[in-house]
Length: 271
Length: 271
Image 1 (cartoon, chains in turn orange, yellow):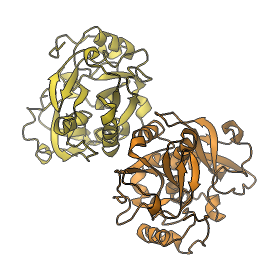
Image 2 (image 1 turned 180 degrees about the vertical axis):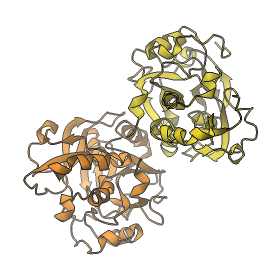
Image 3 (image 1 turned 120 degrees about the vertical axis):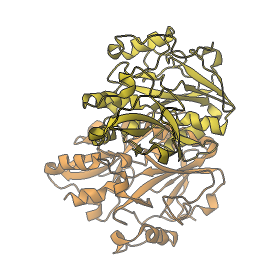
Image 4 (image 1 turned 135 degrees about the horizontal axis):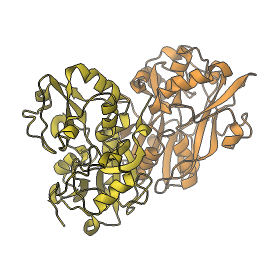
């Protein structure tokens, strides 16, 4: 089953939903970006590959901790675990992307038809996790305010390769008022397991990004005058490596459509 | 070649040696514990396994980040890398342990006779890295003062298993004056990539350790009256898993006899 994203409206109470309730909504068919859902709970990227490819993916993550911080790994064939109590990784994310030989072949909302017992699931930290902390620090998050998906770009920064896996670092962008950029760095630095401090501040062209209004993933956001574009490493990076490295099979989440985990954001806060 | 450890005297200038110079001494045959060498540079544990076992070891490390923080991975057959510029992982550690089916079969000072092109080397953080910071904080380190190897114990804390790998957490122990225990926690917390904060303070029996004078690895240290035994997760933990899990082949460093890397301790300091 292939469904185009954004076939549903954002639930008005999304911030207060428990992770299990949010996952149930997605299991029942809701397809929306997850920013702003279940505030206080960590959201996560997915990369799912056959066991034969799993060492390369895990090593790629180890070598690229800013973009690919691993929060958990489900063993081959496992569909649940402590990050999603009672959940099912095949159904509990709003939308997925299936890649064959590096090419997107489907964007299903349910992986049951694609599941194999040798599939290993990597659950990767997501910057949505620190957005609650940003907002509590008085920093508004443009894509939440504007009700769209976060803009993401393939940068010209190369990931460190690992075995068969190589590709560019994907970055997410949030426009921040110049007077609050230092606060945004300070706050996000304390969450190293969910991308941590920005990788770049202020000059998109240096990252090879020539037009902020045309993100490679997600939606463009309006950038008010006096706001600085701030870039964080993004957990879509493994999917960019899949596109370049062309493994026989790989499955990711649809960018911005994350797994909402049972782990609290504060679990990933360092002193 | 099998050599019993401690066949040489500690060099008097060991604290000031560059990492490359220290590695050269070990390459030339010096066999001593490395605590106190090359102050300011990170030391590391090793676990080396055939590629077929590498995913299980890397996943074990990911699931046990307190005991097995990965600083780097050398691809199958590689013997050098950015943590040991110009070095050779087969010769630059004072002594190694070779395990076959979980049983120690040799303790060589040179791995050349055991090397295979499918061996993957995992370089794992070591608590010796934060000893400089402890000493700069006015906290003396007993095993350095007493000129012996750090005492290490198999605890009753189980590591999280990964595939074929399971076993107990190994801990290192440093006696700390009661008035300085809080400082020791504060200082070491800032080094999460090299075991970070202690896992236990003050009651060895709760860890299943009945006699501190009989460590499972390393040497006993004298514990002055009024000192509290403080325990940190230890990078010998993968070797304890090897002993229990019995992979066909695995190679570690001799406990306390570490790889001295070119990375500065401060690389692993968090704010």
